[in-house]
Image (spheres, rainbow, N blue to C red):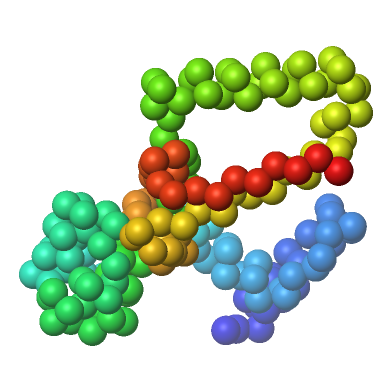
Length: 185
């Protein structure tokens, strides 16, 4: 860099400070860099040399096909099925922006559930009419569910997609063995 170019950069830097006194002052070399890029490229940003065009290998293609067919397939099962390393699977999925999203468990409602729910709400309304403090004396907790299928771990069940699908998974909670306990205080 010549002395003339350095002086020009310093002059531009001082001018920036006069125009924008409340902003952070960048290094004087930045002004020369921006001036050169504007003159050469017609833009402040450098022209992107993006290298070779993106290609998909056979392994990547196979993984993407498997994930599109079954978005809930785990990376460990993909690794075992394709004989690629787990880290390679994760890298490919990350590069394709296929993020793991968790399901939201919801209770499946059937037509025969409506009368039971209506009966319960009518019971609550009647008790509330008789005793206005009735609802304050009930402790509502989560349901304890014991199934023949064992415990289901929601944290290890994912759906891969590029954006959140807000996926839900219905569970048949009402048709399994259940312990419900209601006690007034």
